Length: 115
Image (cartoon, rainbow, N blue to C red; front, side, top):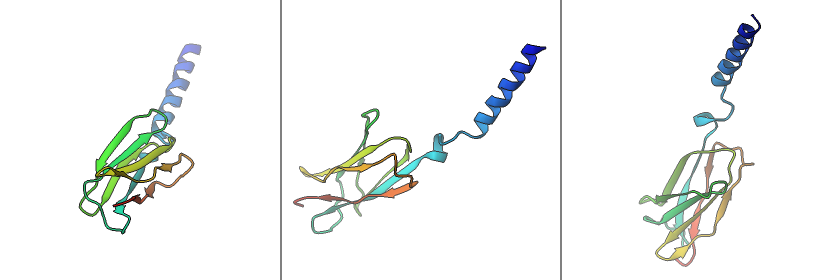
């Protein structure tokens, strides 16, 4: 009888946890987007945008669109990210997306110096 109650309680707890995942998956995910621009404020197509996960050190890349735009989705809200762009040997400054920034959609402009 005691084992049956324990199993029932465990099943209820598991069901509640699955029903409310608390920040996991797409519910807690963030999106980072923006533009890569030249020092003259012109959009740069074909710039390589690097996104580094500060926890795992994994790096994702994105090639900027004709309007200079880039986009990274499904980012963990509990991780810091570093982002920068390269274009024809020139670099932008490195920016940080902090885990303390609770916005779901963040926009960062990356300016390539000397272009």
